[in-house]
Image (cartoon, rainbow, N blue to C red; front, top):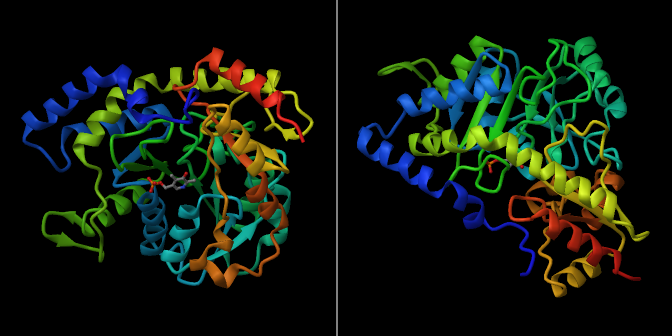
Length: 374
Ligand SMILES: *Cc1c(COP(=O)(O)O)cnc(C)c1O
């Protein structure tokens, strides 16, 4: 591919020496579970997010599951409680809800932002609703006054799925006056899967929160339910962050702002240069507070567009071709009427937007897209 969608070796290349040094530090430390690297990374992530607590965990799905299981252990959620989730999301968001014995209530996206349409929240609340799982999809914060208002009036917990939006800001301040994703709700899950904006060299994740009890409960649940050695207060799990991943993440976290700036510049180039009536570009807010994990266009002839771009040497991907409610494992939700989600799944295409795509690449890709014809 002349313009690769994403190449992880290229992403790692600028950090190769520092990553190898970090790996050597861990090898020499003799500390392979927990320890100083984890503690330092948690403090650095909490500071970057603007919250008092961050707990490193094994991956993003476990981060979400641990949040729900912690709220259950704390008596704030019960099996069978309803959790509002966006219908247009990666399946992991929904897997966390159903794995915990909670009932997902799917809400359609706003076709302009592709994020959950917060004007539909009020109608989705039932007497069983206890939480909203907001997903900051494609790097755009999904949080506004309408969500805060519905949550406050119905006493709902807000959990953020921040797997795709580390470093993004919401257009409106939270009830605490913060705007950074991961600090907007009651608890947030992060993923450091290698393709995310802040990627480890393997699986990794984290939970952030203001709530010391939630942080303590998540930490205990992730460590066999143990609050101190050989003392198990919960029937827990092993969902710990590997120190070697914490060490890698500490190398890359200070460069996240530059990564975000680059993605924002590429998105701005696409926004100004792509001009084709067959293609609907994503909304770019002014000022732009998204972190552009994906730059997703909609096209009624998506598969033809993808084939055309492949032939022109432009790598693309589809996030996501089959929405959660249409997956075989969720056949019980297949009959739900979710036409906007289905429309997006059938027409979305992700263009290259990572550090593998230069500004010149973005201009050339836009020109190729402008030559796409019916
Ligand atoms: C990647 C992702 C997850 C899961 O994270 P993992 O680290 O892969 O388990 C959850 N939600 C969303 C929206 C994601 O993009």
